[in-house]
Amino acid sequence: MKNKKLLVFVLTLISSLTSCDFKAFSEDEFVGYADGSVVTNDNLELNMSNLSIYEYSEKYSISFSMYIKNTDSKSITTSLENYICYRDSDGADYGMTSTSDISDITLNCDLSWGTTCMFTLPTSPADETYYVFFNLLGDTYKFYLNDKPDDLKTQYKVSFYIDGIFSESVNIAEGKSFSNIDWISSDYVYYCNTWYYDKDLTDSVGLDELSGEVDLYGTNNLILKYNCPDSTTSCFISGVNYIPKSGEIVVPRSYINKTIYALLSGAFNYNLDGLKTIYIPLDISRISSNNFTSLTDLENICFEGTSSQWNSINDATIPSDVEVIFNTYK
Image 1 (cartoon, rainbow, N blue to C red):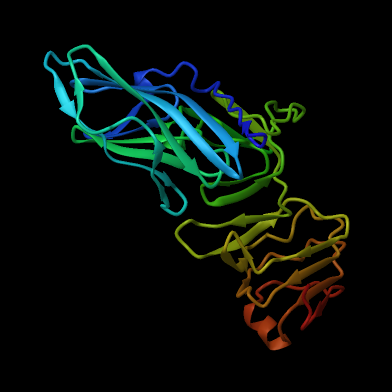
Image 2: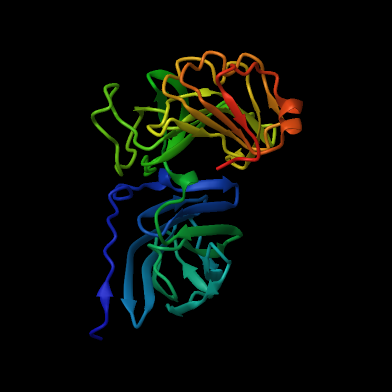
């Protein structure tokens, strides 16, 4: 068995699990984690523990212990039904490869019954989500073999600040990574490639995981300002965040799967020193007034369509020293 190696799981998040960590989704459905979860029903206490995962011959052997204790004053005879391991991504099922008899289990008062359950899986639970499913005394149980799913994790309040301005607070599950997050707040879209714990943007979050309530700070790294109402399939340009070193701005055809249909009034008109060329796609159907007139460095507006198409969408006054070039787009 020289190919056998133990996959070590760091279970710091679940080392102190108790029955309160076991979540009931309905009166007869329970979802938990297969290592350290305890649930107490009206007449049973069920404990899942000692999860081990081994790799052998390009497959993965999973084993864990299950103990059932009768907390009722009467003896109970029952069985584990529909005991299957499922892969969450495609619903593929895998039967047990080794266990004691799980039918006709007799539980005397205040006594426990235990077994070791084993499954052979094609991939590691570290890479794909698997869960064990079974029925017991009319209740349904679902135990995950990998990390707890988000809806079982503690929710922490996270407040986001973009460019020093409060954006929004949300509840996010423990373990969430905050590296390279697209953040959509209300109608506005931001992109921050690094989040920080401090307002001075010196203590970066990097790949750290969330472990409590926290304020996160970032800078909007999008060149353009987008307003993208959630209820529509289109959005518009409302301003410019900064000018690239090239002095060129290319208005994209879409953003976050929404068509960009307009340049709002004032979107291209203030504090834009160094902006020399703007590329506008044919997808734009309206260019509002109060654009371009204050751009002292602007030389060219390149439009993908024809002169007549430009005239049909443009309400802005073009300065005399700015050339509109048609049938041109990057």
